[in-house]
Image 1 (tube, rainbow, N blue to C red):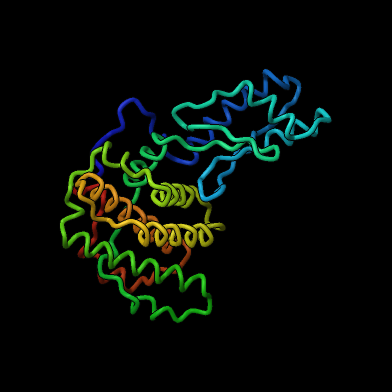
Image 2: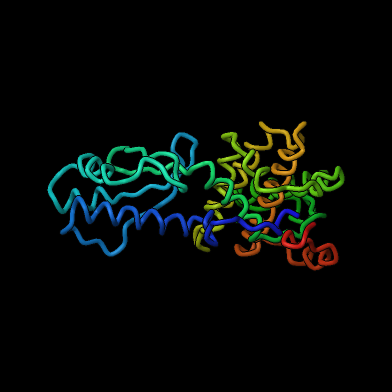
Length: 272
């Protein structure tokens, strides 16, 4: 089963953006107290972005410290980084960029994030086609692009299910095989989508759809390694589930079609 495993020794939500942000805030708070003990900040800023195609957690804490101490952000970042670990379970390295502190997620973070996202989603649109979106007759090119990508994803999943790829066992070690740049970028986009607020959903949905197309156009789902095949199929299923949820939340979901396919509702929490 994709979703019946538990992550031994890890706290719930370990692979989520929210959990990671809280942990990084705690690390930065300790560094702040060591370097700038009189600099009081209500909440240490943490954001996510892509840097040279790689997902990163970024903090502008150095800018706040620099302003209060009359030094450059780059110098403040240098001072803070002395009291930060070079790596831990959450990140593999820290990169300083024009005053920003950028934390690159670790391989383990990506594995746990994929697992967390897979456990937290549900998919039911097995029969969706372009007809369900009115053949993409929309005034918004961005919405049409998103809908086309979702329909393509649904078609891919139908093929995966027909070929038995979604029935392959997918243990933790299988998800750890998702280590190519395209796979990691899609996982990071999905994590950002799961964390997005309603007002910012559409841009992140489009980002995720494009990340999926980038992944699928460069990596086949099938592999001679059954575990890698299972992991890539699980990643596609996770992507479809989160995009479906986003379409529903943004009002871009065709409700009538959803009612018709309830009989084939598939909750990935229950798949064996």
